[in-house]
Image 1 (tube, rainbow, N blue to C red):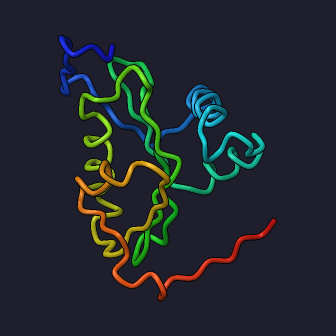
Image 2: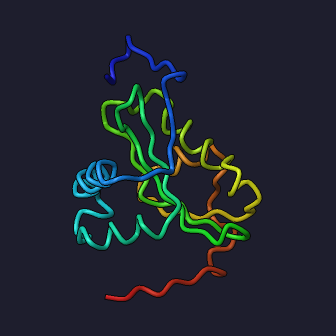
Length: 144
């Protein structure tokens, strides 16, 4: 699909929060190839999906993307486990998915969004994400 002569008709894109077993299997398959979750046990990913607001992206009925949000629906949201099928990258569908999530009615009022990425900073900056102005305000606890 990722061919410079081809394009995506965005009218065929749909997003759902109705996450079923078929969607979870696709997510698990992708996560097993990702740099951030390839060692995460399946039961952990399943529990994370169950306890998050998830968005699954489809093109003509085929799942091509996914993202999940950890949130209190009021003040903070953490965006994670974002993926777009390799064959659909470069067409703007990832940007489209992020915009849909940021404008989702239950999330529109959230003022502070967070995410971590090793290599997709430019991708997220296109939707307003910025580097932390004062990273010394933010702490983390990492458990082994």
